[in-house]
Length: 88
Image (cartoon, rainbow, N blue to C red; front, side, top):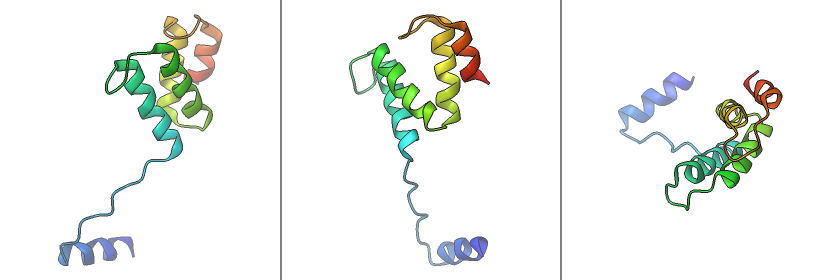
């Protein structure tokens, strides 16, 4: 059915609907903006807070990045045990 709908849209030359990010993805993207200083002032503490929120919502890329932050003490205090938890 999904293929038929996509084919129908393609034949009518309708654009695919724009995907709407989930709240977890929104927090993750905001975290990357703070982390890299893109569009916002670079703030590693705020970045870690955004990643933590997205990670708590179950967003796997945020969980991995939060593990990286804890492993390296970036924006948070170094915590190897907590890093391992988020990596798993």
